[in-house]
Image 1: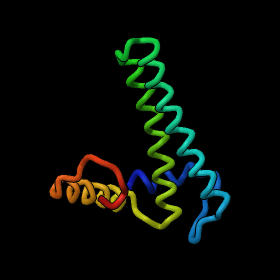
Image 2: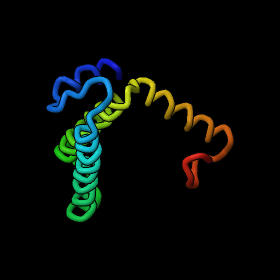
Image 3: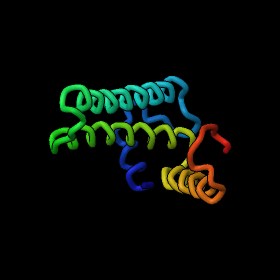
Image 4: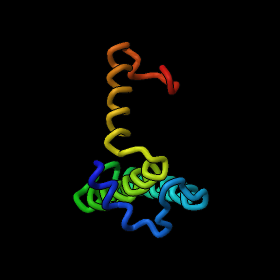
Length: 111
């Protein structure tokens, strides 16, 4: 994940280093929201137009959007000086803790 994060920064037009530039950071956050919306829209259209049946073309198009989501996540983490490996590990640790405490479902960040 860290190798991807390092490579992804080459395509950041703002190329913020050290303390992140606020405008560049906000641009990444808005980009993430936009790409997540595009991902959801492709899935919505499969539900609406194809009775929820995802074919190979749909899979490829959704995967492309997920790649865009990943790029934004990687760069947001970089702006925060957090490695993508660490983000992934923290998430798995959180999920494992919830599973062990039988709180994998439900709502709330700190359950």
